[in-house]
Amino acid sequence: MTALLWGLPGDPTMTAVRRAVAALGVPAVFLDQRQVLDTRVELRVGSGVDGRMSGDGIDLDLGRVGAAYLRPHDGTRVPAVRDAAPGSPRWRHARYVDDTLTAWADMTPALVISRPSASASNGSKPAQLREIAACGFAVPETLVTNDPAAVASFLDTHGEVVYKSTSAVRSRVRRLDPGDALRLDAVVACPTQFQRRVPGTDVRVHVVGAEVFATRIISDADDYRYAVRQGLPRAELHSTDLPDDVAERCRRLASRLGLPVAGVDLRVTPDGDWFCFEVNPSPAFSYYEAGTGQPIAAAVAGLIAAAVTCVAFRGAR
Amino acid sequence: MRLILAHRHDVAARELAARWGGEALLLTPADLHDERLLLTVNGRGEARAELPSRPSVTSVLSRLAGVGPADLDHVDPQDLGYAAAELDAFLRAWLGAWPGPVVNRPTTTCLNGPGWRPEQWILAAAAAGLPVRPVRRLVPSCGDLTPGPPGGGGPPGGPINGSPAGEGGPARAGPINGSPAGGGLADFGAGPGGDMVRVSVVGDRWFGAVLDEIGRTLCTLARASGCVLLEAMLDPAGTVLHAGAWPDVSTPDVAAALASILDRRPG
Image 1 (cartoon, rainbow over the protein chains, first blue to last red):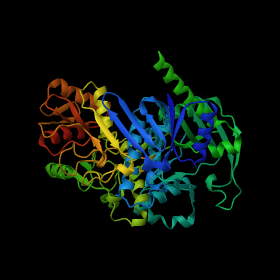
Image 2: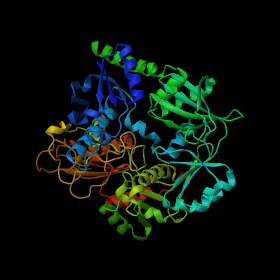
Image 3: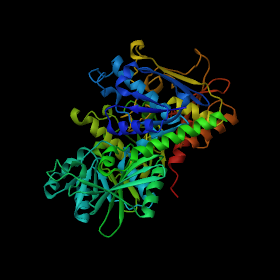
């Protein structure tokens, strides 16, 4: 049995997991997405799932994959394809490979970190908020609308309001200031998400199986990821411990969303209330690992190793 | 009033709207631009979806796989991708929070049911106890690639880690076993010609010339997939060749059964 890792070699999080898997001596195949044009995939489905993948020196029976770690990017954006016109043979090939491996990942009995259908849970942040609240976290009051009058009323009610993308498209969290209030008519173009601003300290939690790694973030920025761009000092990261019940809520949330590995964005208020904003299904945890020394990649590799070992053990019986 | 959300090319949705007359309102994603749309979530995660511009709407039939750039030709081209992703994300939450009946309910990957690819439907049908014809999909290396079938624009759906939306939506034309995943290289193994049986499931009822046992099992498949509406194509021996969430809703039997489900009062 083997592990399959699929992504880009320049991705620091993928690199960290590859190293950690190698350190554990787990047999692993790395599918370099840059070589997508050489990749051949066959998928067979009836009452079970089977298939084969080859190319770039790889020849892999997909039925022998016991665990998969996926961090693929859009295959049409890799260097070998990015200049290809949409609909061209290269472009279509990249799409087919992405789609076929994604289909396999949603069906294989192997451990997948994380299944594409589960990873889509943050495709709609307000929909994900309901899952978050179901696990016992407070969530910020939220309005998504294309009605300027509704936004003005929401602003009146809550005073401090932030806005951000509704979808998984990466966006910076920004505060709605009085100047923006004059531009509210722009929301008629597209439903836009507004949230009551919750004061407090950000805590990023990485759930890896049953393990929980929490990082406290010190920053004055509305979105600490963009502190430097706002002219503020770089965010400080500190490893921290969570109250047991909060850690348990994080585990439950990751499990509810079907995510073996998840990045959970929390904020603890001065009153000690724990809010959760969203869950990242494919967290780039290397940033937090570098800032705190937490062994997150090693924990991910441990999950992969356990899954590969268990499947191999079952097969040997 | 029943709201039908559909892509503009969805002929069956248009015919259904015509059949239902004043009891239905058909809107495309582009039409939503002119509506007032509201979704609120309180601190306990309780969501409320509203359509203040259409207060008579009580239920929703979703025929949308997702919202893509092609659905929004009124938007500035440089904003198309973002606007489509945002409207799609909004509808996913809005449909999930709508207080009345929604058929089919959205999932993380699709605005109409599970958004499964043909292979996932076959796997699920087999798990439900139905005989299936195995599916094979082959993607040769690019050097061996020959052009796909006409009209195949590649697999549908958005970013790979976003919403795969395996089903591309209702068939634009022709049989539902035409091009898998939007026109890929799959082989459904269906023989040439032959008499295939089309079955539509609406809740606990099915419409199509199949044995009761198969009809009941197709209803089980619908429930397992989280769908009220389902379509399956079978060969004369009752082997499932294809299934999906886009039956022809314009036929009288299906339209009537669907109306009775959409008109149920919540609670």
